[in-house]
Length: 203
Image (cartoon, rainbow, N blue to C red; front, top):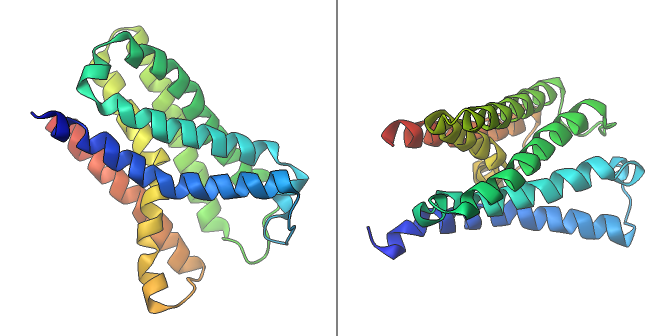
């Protein structure tokens, strides 16, 4: 396999991560600049720590995690060192996401109960996946470790795929209602999970 082909996957993952990373960067700039404060973002100003932890953890997890798919890096000490950082970042993303879904005061125009349930479920599965992968590598079960880290990474990258599943609404020039947004968000996670399972079984 050529060097170019080896780097295609991590490059694609980095590009996929840029969309939510840029959005997260804008949110951090908004918070650090003090506004403007609106009904849609006041919760972040009232309690910024969870959203800041979520954004920072997600950027680290998405960008650093992409390079774990490079075979030459997986065989060296870099993979283990980066893996420790990724485990902490992944748990930060999952647990802060659950916290925000359950305890932030959401505006009336935001998503309803089905979206909250889905976010909590995704965060819970991701936290489990990271934790189980860590336990697996400690007992030197590398096959199980790899499979569950891929699943966790796929869930974390859902925000990137969801940017594309919302495209039909943008093309149609309509704002999705609760049902449309739920379907678009669920589709993003479902696509990533399907690809992850294909990669796991193929390898």
